[in-house]
Image (cartoon, rainbow, N blue to C red; front, top):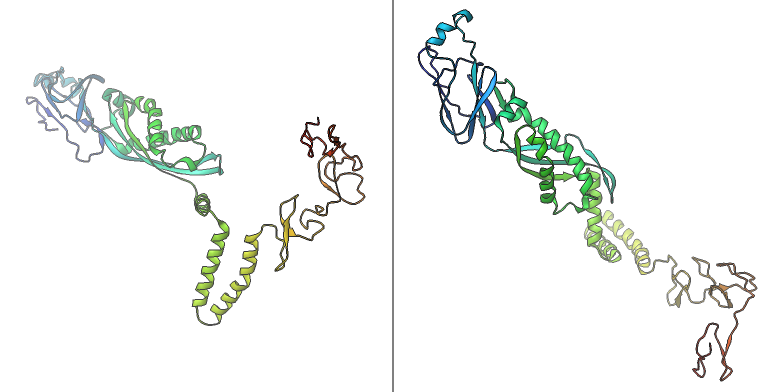
Length: 376
């Protein structure tokens, strides 16, 4: 502010923000003064001016040059203020408000927040982003936040706004997101909806949240490793072929090494290879002799020798002597009850006799297996 501390000359009041971070600046800077009747106030396009006279906000001024009207008259005020040691009781000050957008203000979680993930369980997340603000109601902003402070910058309010954003973010994320595995591609949607939730919190102080962006949502390092491992498994469609390839590559690399160490590794991998291939060929764990015939157990579907009387894995009898009439399980010799359903083994199903050709048919047959006539 360019002023002449005189009882005669009027003031020219203006302000330039050299730091780029001041939201509000008071003139005169040392406190209220005797702004005289007819003082000129110059307000730029990116500013607004608010005149406080006798402790009250009298008027707000937009861009342009304005003439201020107070009761402090040049020369006469000095004479009338003698009882107050020359200081007029008609105090006035102008608060210059920066109306531009303040960008690249950062927010983030100072400590991880708990999130119950439907896939990963209870985990802790960190989130970061940026936001932009603008003063849209100068008088409300001054009365609710600035008060009588001579300067008010983004630093003075940034910490409070960060806490508000993080609080709303925690609630919103728990409502709309089930698992962080679905995060890719949703940052724009989450940012927009979170910004809408914060409109009332910022508008309460005459501020507008013009933009808000979520730049990252990160789980702990161990959870990130688990997600990476899951992604690798999804890429590998045939795990047996992958194991074989890795084993072959290890053998090839060991063969290239010279000396006893390379030879030992190569021999060790060579001894491990038959077991790897045997495991990948059959999941039953039963080793087969070269040239022996094999079959599948009807109970557990594992590969077993063709001449086996019982499955070595589930114990199912392979030599069919009789079947349970109730569930069809193979019964042991002289068995009185089925080992699966407990049904009496001696109870035999009644065969179906064809009324045309007198042939015997299986229980429950609807057509004769000899002449084809309907038998039920």
